[in-house]
Length: 273
Image (cartoon, rainbow, N blue to C red; front, side):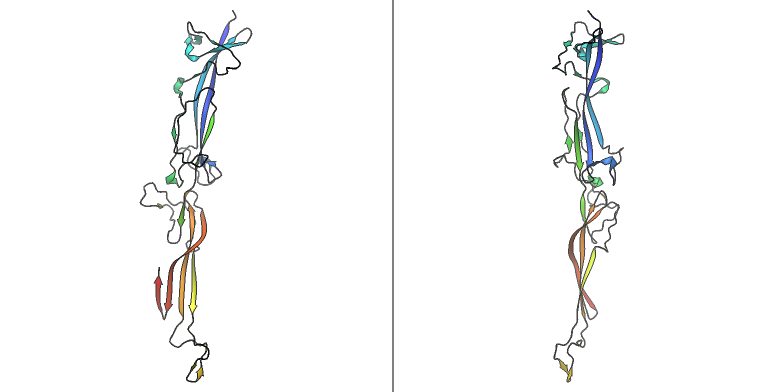
């Protein structure tokens, strides 16, 4: 009978969890072109692995693979792995590539791909996590793979919160968007210009005599009516915009709204807001 060797063989089934910014070309969170997140606080890639192990039985003379022992059938004898008394290996079969593999939990290796609760980045200006199909994805379920399982990649996406800003709702950097919410994000640094978003439309009414009007025999057609000053009417409009709470980018909506009006006549101004 030829001597044999016992060669340990390992296989890993892994799950890679990648956290991505859906509004910055799906880049991972630690490598964003704008406002990247700290890897120390929010690592953007998590690798989980379950390991499988077996012992290959090889004929030392012919180098033929004879079969496989499960790790539970082996023990250390004087520093080398040997089959336990009475154990027999599973014969090699080309159509059974998983023969002999068992989950290897030595050295603290896990037996499952543990459940993971995805980051809540609301306070940093993001919406909740979603999956590849845009569905809410608060938690990734635990999985117990087998040796035939494929390694997988799980992508978790975050969109940016967009909030309305206007001259009457200034996005002061560092202040909370919602002061009543403890988990509210703050306005990021931005270059919002309320003056550029304010437009005033005026109408001046001249009070003049109608054509053919005579006073004391003098034709005063088109002349200003004595004692009546011009009437000035003004309407102020604000252009609404949206602020990206992650990057601070401003996008005008193109929509204007009237916010106040004023009428001035004879030195007296009446305002309506």
